[in-house]
Image (cartoon, rainbow, N blue to C red; front, side, top):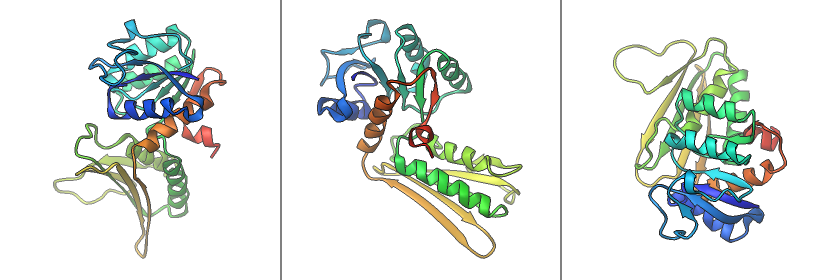
Length: 248
């Protein structure tokens, strides 16, 4: 499986490259795109998709959501399966991803961790069991992360809202005013070099259930992205996610 890594010069792009060079899941690194270049992979890293190598089997994106239009255009033009592991997309970019999925297979997830997928399902079951409970999501990441809340935290919130009638997602909290009925709160913490912690608190008047996932290494997400790419190879056009991969 020949892969092209979008964002090859970034930390996660390099993690995917390491796995490919080791032959993980049969992956082979044959191309890359990064406007800032790549000192380690300068021979295969193009500055833009216009100059990228189209002779690949799949594209894995760990760049920035602002590259969505160019990324989708390249994948559609060359009929390539696409794994998007970038978060923070605008509504317009999300719409473009859904449109592209009508022509090519697109795997799009906020988090490529099996553990997070399980966290989502457990949290949904718990929230449904305690319909009157307050729900708060607290996510913690390293101090270099740009988007807040994290894409994973927002996915958690939306999934929890799907099992709650009249749910309202609130990001951050300040000023005057009590907690509203049906509110699902999402709080972001940025400190140190933390890879990623997502914790869901489901609290009734008499008890609290907390569900937590903690990533110990960013290589976890690279493994998930390569696994998704391998799985995507024989799929028809459509939009896929981790839940579909695991058939949860």
